[in-house]
Length: 492
Image 1 (tube, rainbow, N blue to C red):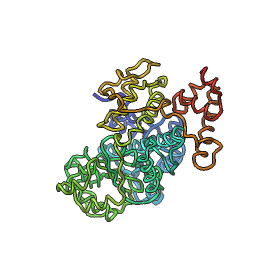
Image 2 (spheres, one colour):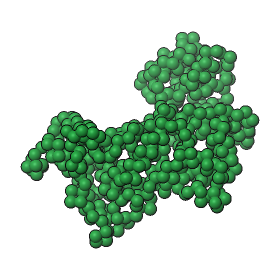
Image 3 (cartoon, rainbow, N blue to C red):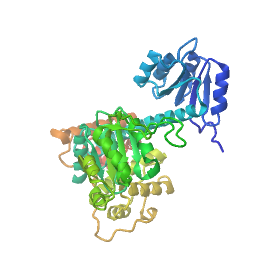
Image 4 (cartoon, rainbow, N blue to C red):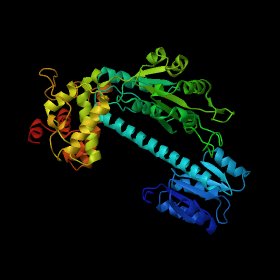
């Protein structure tokens, strides 16, 4: 069964000849949500009212050439991925535009339906990667802003901070990320499942000079050995059965950006040998081709198993490990930073209350003690999922208690001590009038609270939700900064 038009990717086709438009519609209306235009101006009108991911346009049209349609179209829709159809492949302006990467690809006329279909699918994948990269970078910026408010005494570092925590282990990790982000070196991230290795990689990319380029994440464990070479390095048309078109691999897609190879230890040894050459020489050879292609890709690799053990077992090349391990970063498991669990709980409750559109729930002390005492096998991801389940199943306004956390055992008596105020107060030195880093962060925090209260018309619950903190935490901050009296807080 074909998906309905609302679920299919939108593609705009532009040609001044009605029979060619009919041919395109007949070939692709079952695959894509096809929009059509018979002229450049009509195409631009569509772009102003609709949001296609890909535009396929003829170059030679009487009212406006395809290049001009693309130029104006990108001003309207910067995320648009253009493909151009032309019978004039020696057109200097066209080649220059392609070299400037304004155009995803040109197709020579008359076009072959299968070739054009695969080209459109590749363009849609590029569009998806760009939007996904932009969304994740926005989340990183949002996380950075939240942490500046929530963690008044977290050491400030340059670049996004996506690992929530206050322990020395997290501060060290954030410092390492900040230092390595601006250096164009290969990084190997080691850590257990669910510790946040991809978030660390994205943070490195977002803090690097490549931040405006694409970030491509590849789970090596999901790539079969047979397809690995083509998926990573690309292939040439006709190089194997079904290779009906030239294909870019992940390395070429990530050119001038960052390629994240997650679970790199899962790659088969023959592919590891080819990967070694790419990392060493900075060039790839597509499968079925003999011509090397120079690339500028920053490689960040990750593994949940120590690679030295994989080398000893004969499952990983020692020379490739040395090449990947230029700068090693270890992400600590949650059990090594239990003091951060309370902060993570508050962070995830605030984050997902906004996403789910529910009031920010409180959590009982016994439930919090159980979470702090528990050895999460899936680490931070496991903790986050447990809290999401509890929020989804709870009634709006409910307090999350231990019964709402199935699988989390009650903490043994005396196993965990939670401060009476659960650490909500900033340290005594973090007052807005203090000099130095802590005072600067406190001043910033107070400014953000004042802005949130102004925007909420003085409604403290609404301001707390906007800040991503609990109402109780906001009241503590108001008292700390002299923005409300103790008696007023008590009445609240």
